[in-house]
Amino acid sequence: MGRNLETALLLVAILAAPAYLMFEGSRLDAGAVVPGIRLFPYFAAFFFAGAAQLIFRPGAVAMVAIVSAGLILLACAHIALGLWLIVPSLTIAIGRRSWPIVARFGRFGDLSYGIYLWAWPVQQAEVGLLGKDTPYVTLLSVSLLFVVPIAWMSWHLVEKRALALKPSRFRNDPVKSGFIPVGANQV
Image (tube, rainbow, N blue to C red; front, side, top):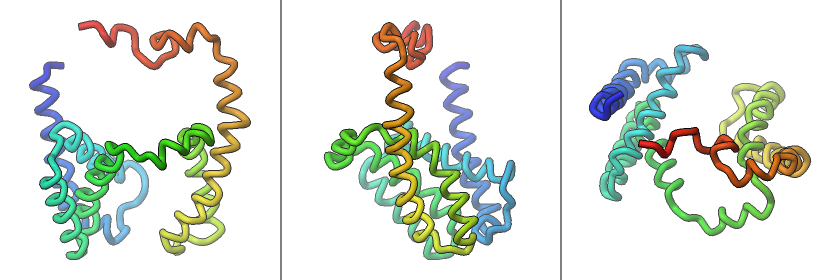
C-alpha cells in the first residue's frame, strides 16, 4: 500500500471516529449500546485518536487545548466525545515521559503481561461479587489489590521460568525470537 493511500485511510478513520461518537455518543453515555460488535467503533475511535497523536505529534499548547476541549465536553455531558479527546492525549503524553519511580518497579519483575492477562478475570469476578453498580473507583482499587500480586506470582512462578527454558540462540537473534519480522529491515 502506498504512503499516500495509508495517509488517506488514516485521515478518513480519524475523521470517522469523532463523527461516530457525535452520533452515538449520547447513546454510549446513557449505556444504551450493547456489548459486542457495536462497541468496536467506540474502541476504534480511541485507537485512531492515539494514532493521530503519534503521527501528528501535537506540541504542549495543542495538547492543553485538546484536553481542555475534552474537559469542556465532559462538563457539557458529552462523555464519550470528551473522553475521546482526553484519554489518548494523556495516555500518550504520560507514556512518552521518563518516570524514574516507574523504572524502579522493574526490580520486582516484569508484571506487564501478568496484569494484562489477569485483570479481566479478576474484574469479572469482582463485578460478580460486588455488583455492576459498584463505583468505578472502588472496582479499580479492589482490582489493583488483587491483580498486582497475582501478576507478581505469574512472573516469578511461570513467566520467568518459561523464558529461562528458551534456547539461548533465540535470545541473541531478534528475528528468530519473533521480535523482528524477517525482512522488516529490508527496503
